[in-house]
Image (tube, one colour):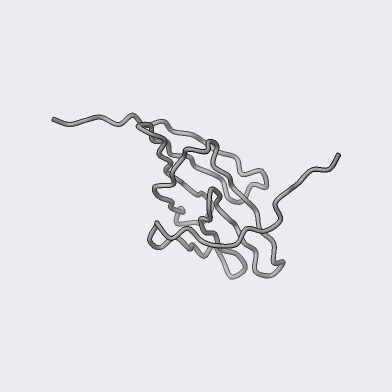
Amino acid sequence: MSLLSIKHIFGIRTCLTDCIVYLNDHSYLYPSSRNIILYNIDHKCQRFISFEHEYDTLESLGVSSNKQYLAIALNKLDKTRIIVYDINEPLNREIQIQIQKQKIL
């Protein structure tokens, strides 16, 4: 039995503005398909942060000023989540925040 694993993902998700973030001289991140790609220029390798559910839509992404944390906003039907990742952790430790949409009359 053999297993498949993703080595490289090509392409960029263009629905977001300013979505390529330079982390330092050696790496940057960008959204592609249902993943956030952390690309190392020197080693020519990629690390992936995948969305949890197939119906998640990436609404926005942002990086902290010290380039340590990545926050992404995901929308799934009427539920919005903000997930914060520690970029420097090899396993991309995450913190989830649930937000309920409210209609204002």
